[in-house]
Length: 160
Image 1 (cartoon, helix red, strand yellow):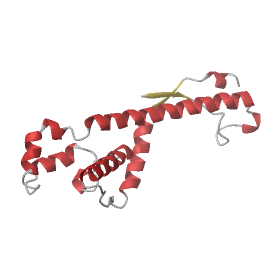
Image 2 (cartoon, helix red, strand yellow):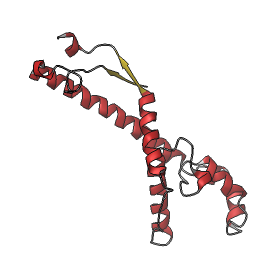
Image 3 (tube, helix red, strand yellow):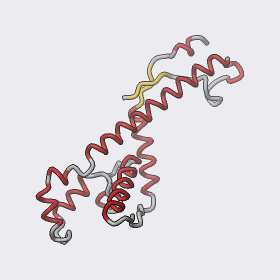
Image 4 (cartoon, helix red, strand yellow):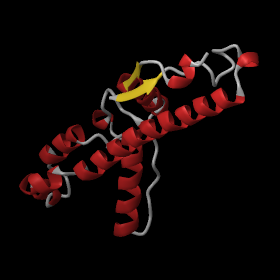
């Protein structure tokens, strides 16, 4: 959970801006910058989790992976499970999680670019279904909002 304090004095939409002192504006601005930092650290933790968990089933189920691999993926028992277990197979309809987010998009980009460059020196054309990026964007907004809790009154608010 990301805990932040109310701040009504750094936005002309939410305060009597003509009566906000420079000192109060400075304090509110510092508070906002700290809040944004907390949000970005949340995303950083999500990226770290994506990094740690990327394609883990290639290791934990190497037998299944190998069984599909040696058929040139004509057999797809492992591959079908893999797309559902891993959130970054966004170019296949059954690989798109309902709550797809921008972390998943970045994971997919990293996966495809690194695989293409290492294997053939090229990255094949990457495309997303229409609307998927907007859905990922909106889901990321919803995800972050669900992690934010506004608490207490900061010191600069008490000064008014």
